[in-house]
Image 1 (tube, rainbow, N blue to C red):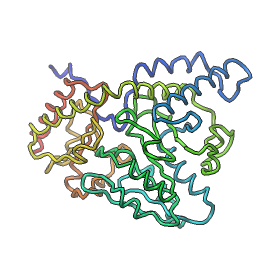
Image 2: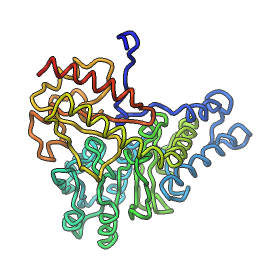
Image 3: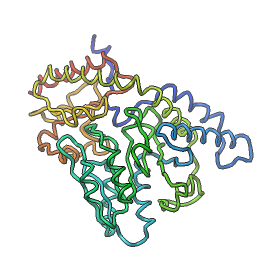
Image 4: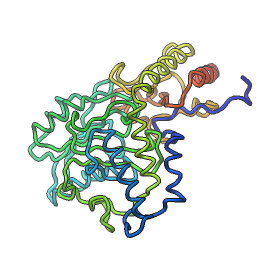
Length: 385
């Protein structure tokens, strides 16, 4: 294969995924043909849009084992996380309480918690083990009489470790504390079941599951959502009064279709992703025998591979890499001179953390792509080492 024939191999699917062509085709009519505002159903254009929204709401709900009425559309998991954490805490009034979370959460959970600390709230940031797993017993032990919320992600976005959600949910239920879960990375990569996990709130994002950017959802178990959540903004009363604004119908339709595909493709996607991941590990070990794999060896998301290359300058590695798209930690922290807060919490040293990268295999990745990545990584390592 010549240089002209090479194409960029996209292995950053945990940052964002390409929109599935089936999803794109489902969205197309709602940009130009079905253009009504779903809040105005006095004419057929608005009614058609409203019907599409509710169909998508049902599709999203079905993907996580929920009822349609429990789904609130947002702009993505970041907004959903903020709405869950800040909304619940604001609903408790002026008296600061206590939150339990982990040190390896996405910044969209950590930063709202840091903000609440400035307002007098107490936050316990639990440290995981060296594989990135949070012990459910430590979660229960951290719950106090004044604890109002536990927020633990389904699976880590940098190392892929899946958390013991059932046990954590049971612990929260025993102690009468609400349980929020950031499941942005889970949809389409593992079964998601809000009842099995005993979650009260759960955050989703379409663009992590081959849907469009700019749309997500918050699952809220309570029927009267305003009883437990205070809105982040006001005006319009859409989405049960806690997330106002004109609904982005094309994106919502895309989200619903992506959720349907995520469920129907799951049984086939998971083993294929694992096979490609094993092939990638073989390729990387072939050009660097001392690579370090981060995350849990078995309880992890398929297709997410966090790899450390000892003695390699991370910036030079990324700069030298051609025709391969990977990331150095989470997308939200790209360009930061500091090492990943996730790897640091796992006890990974500064130098190794700075020379660690995330390879995100996806639905459209092929064996030929893995071959190309292995060859390119080998070329770069030969130069740098």
